[in-house]
Every structure is written in C-alpha cells, then in structure tokens.
Amino acid sequence: MTGAASRDTIIQKDQTMSDEKVDRLLHELEVTNPERYELVQAVRQAVYRVVPDASERVMYGGFMFSGAQPFCGLFAYKEHVSVEFGRGCDLEDPHRVLEGNGKHRRHIKLHSEADTTAKHLESYLHAAYRNSCDLPQT
Image (tube, rainbow, N blue to C red; front, side, top):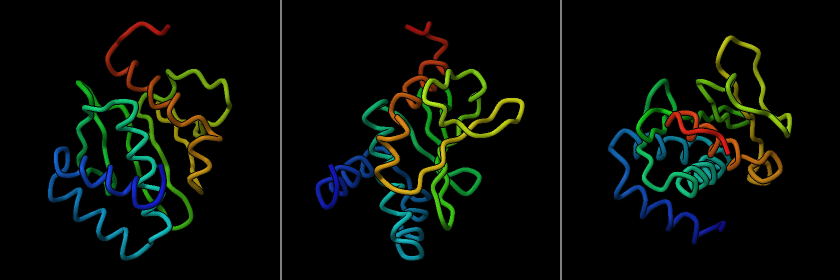
C-alpha cells in the first residue's frame, strides 16, 4: 500500500500503539523532510506487518520497536533512513544488504520505498524479531 491508504493504516496503528513522543517526532519529520517522512511511514508499516503487536517508542532520536525485547530501531537522516539491528551480527545476510562492522550492530540504509522490497527489509525484520524472542531459526 502506498499513498493515502498506507497513511490511513499507519494513523490507525498510531492511535493504538503510539504515544505523544512518537506523534511529535513524526510531525517534526513530516514538516522538515517530507520525503523521509514517507519512507519512515513505509518502514513502520513493514514493521507492523511483520510484528502486528510491536510496541514503539522514541529513543536516541528515532523509533525503537519491541516485542518482548527490542528488535530494531528506525532513524531518519537527511538523505536516507536507517533500520538498525542491535544484534545485527547474529543475523544471516543472504542478500548482502547489512552494513556496519562493529561488534554487534548492523543496519540497512534505505533511500526510497523501493529499497524496502529490493533490500528484503521484511525478511530482516522477521529474523531480528525471531532472534529477540530467542526462537529457533527455521
């Protein structure tokens, strides 16, 4: 979904899963960088497709998503959006899209909504969520 339909889906999700800080950060982003706002909304929608009952909060200047445990963060920059995985070192990377060479963290840089599909974002979100729950990989 894109456009008004996806925004309506996110707005419905915001009413049940959001808090004032999330709403404020989304509004600031919409005003200051509308292109990144649309991409952030697309990523948020992907997160909720993978983990419908995820919780969301503002931390470190971005959005943190959790199930029983945190599994990813979403940060908007001037030219891209980054989906961060705190235990990204534990994720398999069959599509070779994870960036970073720190001890634990890895991220996926997204420049457009098309990147969410091209870089298999939902697959990585699912894997990160599974890892956060300590479920066996299948």
